[in-house]
Length: 178
Image 1 (cartoon, rainbow, N blue to C red):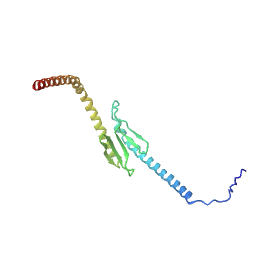
Image 2 (image 1 turned 60 degrees about the vertical axis):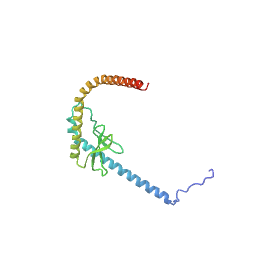
Image 3 (image 1 turned 180 degrees about the horizontal axis):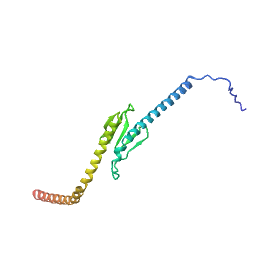
Image 4 (image 1 turned 180 degrees about the vertical axis):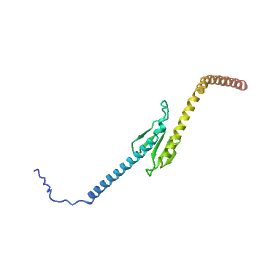
């Protein structure tokens, strides 16, 4: 109507090599993303199986102990969290459980195995060590509080002793050079 020519729907347009390549790449990308999703689902399933194997261990922990926060997180790298610093993730082969702990100095691998019972045993040892650390910290907390009450007096005495020694040194220097 306005000077445009109508496209004839019956005529077949030749497909350019670029359009054909783009279509092929889109298909391959969709297939790869489907494979990645399947692998991620497999990782999640393996981590959930390990999580279920740990149920008896965490059932024995007293209810008032709140240092553990176990759960499976979804994301680019699924993880089974044991506490704030320790977690399990799958290795590169997606069959190996890698139990790691984040420290001040970097990531520390505590256990690496493709066997659920072996990984559960390593996690049980870790949980036991954390419980013992907690008990020691709670038992050792009272003497530290008592010594911290006396520490301000020690600081004050050291300050005044230093002040007197400094004044004496200044007086001696004034007599010697004056």
